[in-house]
Image (tube, rainbow, N blue to C red):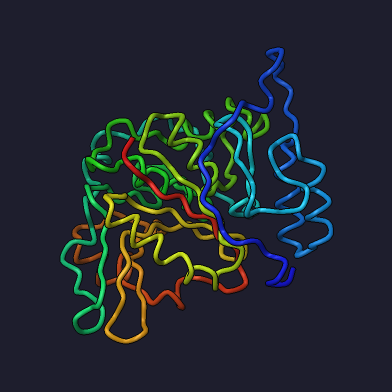
Length: 314
């Protein structure tokens, strides 16, 4: 799909009636958004426009694509899927744990970015998240989710904001059950090792009564540069962590701030959920790069689309 055929990014909030809500049937129908995502990932402009026409009942105008999508409210959607199915890894337990042991939750570190030095000398502009958060990562609750759980962990970090508390943060099994009950995922999603991305995170934030999650789709990684002003405004206006996920770059992460250096370099403060183990301190995570300032050009893959989920207070 050429750049001329890509619409400008647009932020989205779940709205409208549920799709599979009539008659109480438990049968699952694949949402038309999944076909739209498939066409976009394949770079087939014609197919993408054809699918847009076929799903006009879901609010997609026939002449446009992702930039004009109105996401149905809460019950069933798959906007450009943030990630394909991950390979199943032998020896990993399914997500059947309903609650993390209290002792494990007590070990979670809060606000792990504090104390980091700013990039460059005297940044021209700086904006950081407000409030507090907990750092959720692989295995932090005793469940081995290496290779598939980064989206869930990033969602849990979002749910812990703005108070930085574990109370009310859903476990992985609860997240999977909610997505299946809402109709976003087919029967059998429970106890799987299937990925989730920003769209699922937005649904779960509303379902569990967490902070608001506002979706923004960027057709290509290079387009993130055009979203920096949005990120500045988000953080300056009291916004929380921003979840990021894509297709070619399917590793979920969170953004905690944005900084413009004295030159043309722009940095984002990233929080990586792929840490495995029990971190002892913020400085340990910072020294190893699990949280830190990174140039925008090194964070985003120009060949990947990205979804962003920006959290705000309810």
